[in-house]
Length: 388
Ligand SMILES: Cc1ncc(COP(=O)(O)O)c(C=O)c1O
Image 1 (cartoon, helix red, strand yellow):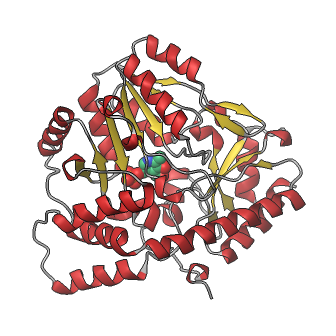
Image 2 (image 1 turned 60 degrees about the vertical axis):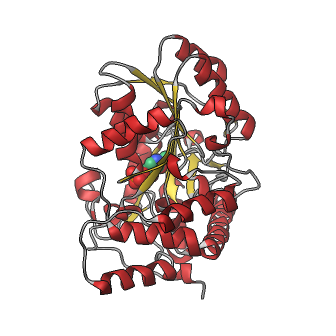
């Protein structure tokens, strides 16, 4: 049996996805199958679990710092997997990508400033911008028959109106688009032209699963890295989200020292030793695990594709180029978002509603396929019940 086939009961573990549907979504019911939050229902790699166990067995949990092994593991990972040079001094460590983005927003903008997002887009970007009292400016992706493109012309118009920051999701959640070198380059050139800070969230970078290569903004020429902050993490890749550790790569020295000062000001200059052990071990030793995981995710995606083409004539699905999230276009069903959601919930399945990614997500749902095949098959039964 493939280890990813193992069914693990996550109920009563404090899981956001499995245990917090009443609090976060107002949904109750013992039999709901959650496919909303983007984390896996798989065990983390055994080598990571072993390393964590060893650290726990040591038994002393005083304040911890990162050592050379930590930095080297990151540097080697980016070099070997993404042909990307990361310099040790660029690496700053934050307790998660969202907290790090929020700090960057506070550092680079002031209340009332505008920040550009591509929509449909990850809802928490919008949340942290609004909660920081900044203003979201939408640069909707162009959609043609389910294929998404960046709208550079409109982006330039947004920049021309005085935007300070672009949060760029590379690869993109929820569409799973992997942006090409040419696209990343063009984004960065526009940012330079209009003095806009480029916050490139690359948390999905390790999970490119098609023939499209993820191109990190860290590979841009020096001139285009002056106003660049790149967010990365091992968490999405290896199923370690609750360990709360991420790395923000900041090539420009003065921006970096300002960012470090901000981290310091928030007491974020010491780290969870378990998170450090997990991230280091994952980057050092878990390439094979990731390769196996990628093929498992590809199979899940293919199975969904086959299921949809056989059973759901009103649903269109373009497989993601990265990640394990399926962005389903249900517009042909002519249902309102409320009706669509009700149908899913009645059938016992909890998706992320497309509308939560912005108005361009109307008529879409996002399903998390990071689960064992048995869960996926159960989901197919319920999706069929919901949509036919
Ligand atoms: C694009 C993107 N950025 C950030 C996050 C969350 O990162 P973290 O858990 O490190 O705050 C997610 C989680 O789904 C995401 O999709």
